Image 1 (tube, helix red, strand yellow):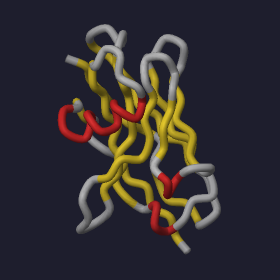
Image 2 (image 1 turned 135 degrees about the vertical axis):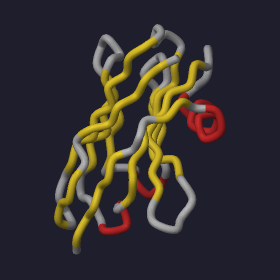
Image 3 (image 1 turned 180 degrees about the horizontal axis):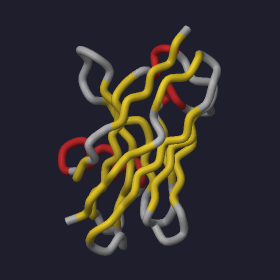
Length: 128
């Protein structure tokens, strides 16, 4: 069982930047897809970005060009660099992980929505 702990959230003005981190511990990180999801008040949880075991990445259209997902070489920390933040980015952000050998980041993002292990979430607030 993998354990996920998010950090780095907070409040920032529109146009600003934040970097979220997710510490990954537990079983081997081999063959894992990792991702970020978010949930705004009174809305469904939605996918944000994913990275597969080969380093391939995918993003939802609303964050393309503004957010970057990455992980360290040891795969013990997952990051989400968020630039040009907008008020509509305000949400609880969740780190997700799923062991799915051979999945691309696109496939992994879809699978994680149903089957992932989750972190506890961290709040991001973007003020206008």
